[in-house]
Length: 421
Ligand code: SAH
Ligand code: SF4
Image (cartoon, rainbow, N blue to C red; front, top):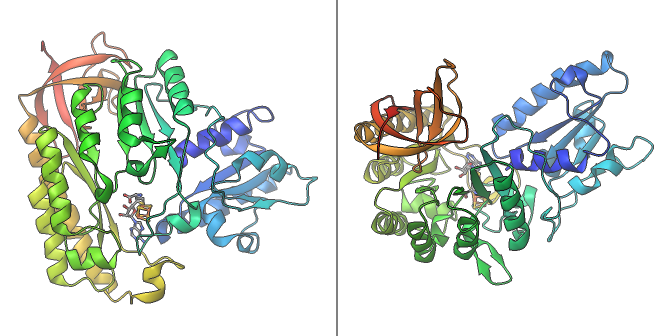
């Protein structure tokens, strides 16, 4: 999400500033921040210390903090670090005024009920010219008990479908072959009665050669209608990120996730019914308040039952202002949180390896994204199910579809060679 937002920021500033490749060349450095966990914030403070030291060499250098930490700390940040300006996630349009050093107002952290930046064409500065993020909504209304996002990014709002389509068409025309539609809970997208499934269909129809992905789906809102649309269009990737957070109904209730373990598993069966080969990934939190060993075992058993291909795993980090922070004791000791997280990571490593082993011998169409880090003789791309495949580059190019037979794998990567379908 921040990656996509930074591309909007680059666009807002493009008439006054030129992008450079290293901090030492810059007259303006904006650090786009995440508040979801404490260690993300600590990393930002460390980074700001490094960056503000550059002011000694460049007297014109201005440093700004943008994103969720701006919403959370507001002007306290001026006392904590030597920064010049602060802009929250809905204030990027005002950045030119905030940056203007003649201007006394160097902070804007107002949250908006309507801002979607829909008329701003992001500047795609990443090296990857094949796959792009397209933001379709902002904010979140779910208020999961542990999560700071509804407070830092404000209320949910959907971007006009015409502007999403126009941006995606332009991406396709300039050579992009994949878009990921982004939102905190894409399933609640609603713009003038166009829901997320209908939006996906419109994007999928742009061109069969354009792959479409999305993130993230809240399990409570994943609809059969969306699954039907996914099944109907081969260019909609068969991969769903469905954050479970926990496998224990008691913990899910305390987290205010609005589904039980059983409801979650029903959604998984529904996915398997419509999309038998669909890739599945999740987010899991270890050691949420009141989590017992039995609750934790339930998470491990859920992981085995679903057999996720991939999981993003986190240790519970109490966030000031959230319901859990104010009302439920953070009573799982740190060493227990660490131990449970490690068990989750180890199990997922195993499940990822097993899932990859099942793909050995199979044939996949892969969209090539770049050269392998290890050698220019190899390219890498992803399957529709969101697995990375490394294969001999031969005459293939980045942005090309290649049909591969999987010959080998590790837990993180598939290895393939060219094949006929
Ligand atoms: N909107 C997305 C998640 C956005 S935050 C969704 O609901 O799926 C990404 C992930 O960070 C969450 O899914 C959760 O697993 C994790 N997370 C959020 N708050 C956290 C906290 N306080 N401590 C640990 N992990 C947290
Ligand atoms: Fe946070 Fe829950 Fe909203 Fe995701 S759905 S951003 S976890 S409050």
